[in-house]
Structure formats: structure tokens, C-alpha cells
Length: 181
Image 1 (tube, rainbow, N blue to C red):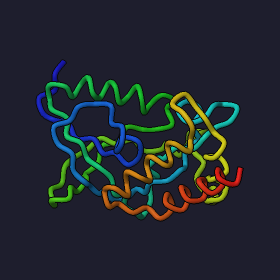
Image 2: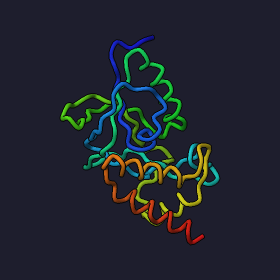
Image 3: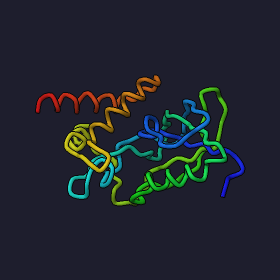
Image 4: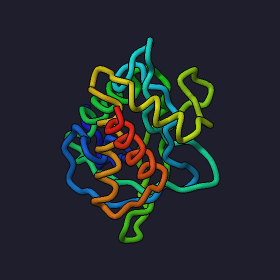
């Protein structure tokens, strides 16, 4: 089935640097009411059940998140959404959510994004930055080392001019720990 119009997707973590789908337009964007946070234990992509890693999720609250919005043409939207659902909903810790995002040109579009299910057992908000660094340092999953995920996300956010002080601190700390090992 082909959708009748394009679909927007909001990326805040690995989708920024590895979307995995074709898109016709990409723009910096802001999502209100959520913040980017290492609040999800990863048992597939960046960790295992025995040694979970941490991945970013959107956690609801009085905040906003800067990221990238991708417009997917209608002709490939359905297959792109199938791909995203297989990737993002692998353990049901994320919920597919539709929300307005403000593009860098001021336009507001409705976008699909993936937010943490706070009732899921992989939800782990409240870890100190040091605890996050220690987990990220040691975890490895099906898509590689957890540290690689952190470094790629922090670097791509910086390239786009999107500062995230917590990610910058974590990247510096994990690099320091790797050098001390």
C-alpha cells in the first residue's frame, strides 16, 4: 500500500547519522516536551541481556530536543516505516509517537518519532553521568560497541551545531576511561 502523502520522521540519536532509509528533505528541527536521554537499557543493538548498554530515547518532560527531521516521499513511506518499526520497536521499549516539530525555517510539521515507554523494564532514567559512562564503556551489542554509538551521535550533533552538554561530557569521559585502560 502506498501512502498518499509524504511522512516526516524526527531523529535525535542514531537516525541522525544512520537513518537507513531514503528521504527527499532533511532539516534541523526541535521537538517540544521531550528531552534526549540515555534512559533506555539496550539488550540488542548496543548491549546484551547479560550486559545491557544504554541508548538514547526521548523522555517526556518540560524540555525540548534538537534533532533532524526527514521527509520521506509518499512512494516509499510505507516501506520506510516498516524498516523503522523493525529497527526501533525491536523490544517494545519505544513507542511510536506523532508530534509537531518545528523545522529550522519555522515551518511546523507532524513527525513520527520514537519515545521511551516509561513502564517498560528497559527504562532506566536517573542514572548519574558517571554510571552512564561506565555502562557505555563496557557494553557491546549486535550493532557494535556502545561507545561507538555515543561517539557517533555526539560528533554528528556537533557537526550540525546542535550542542548537547551531557553527550559531550559522556563522550569525553568515556574516551578518557578508554585511554586509562
